[in-house]
Length: 229
Image 1 (tube, rainbow, N blue to C red):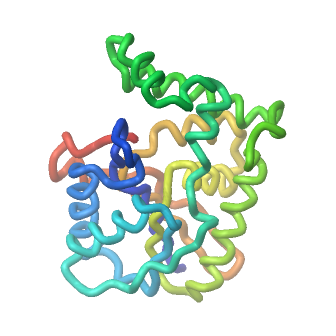
Image 2: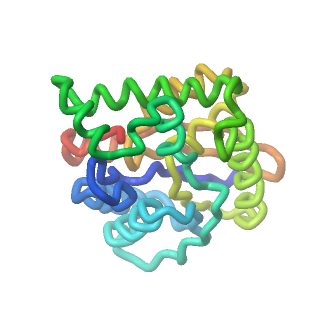
């Protein structure tokens, strides 16, 4: 059976004007992953969403890999859901980033306060009770990612492949393969580490989740490299 290496992007730039770019730690995570992958896989193809953090993660992996890798094929179906919209539907005032920064600064741990608000916002989105408020519903997101998985497997044509994507798509792919509830999918999404690797084995129509959220390469290099946003 062939293997799909599902990679969550490196740490993005939380709190910066351009969240989508990798942080310096995100670049380091990608390079460490590249060195780890070099001993394990010669990918026949690389796929990713069209987000900057997806592309930069592949660039960092390539640097660490130390050899030529295939160019990343962009599949928009692998993009993350619009987390900005999801959060702003719960907290409309946070459309003003200065207001959001002021609110979060009032907490002893601003990053944790944001994570709690984010989890509430995602739960609201997933509930299906407010679908008319979102450009993409939870069910629409799940279907988009499932279609992208089918497409990349067809294009991979039996080869091992690397996929640079985000936590949301990884969680719903795992949900689909393991037949989990939405609640379990959200719990999984909350613990997916940056540049962690989840492995899907596939052969024809058969596919199974063999490994979920492995980030041992980061722990072996430097535990401080383990991040979750």
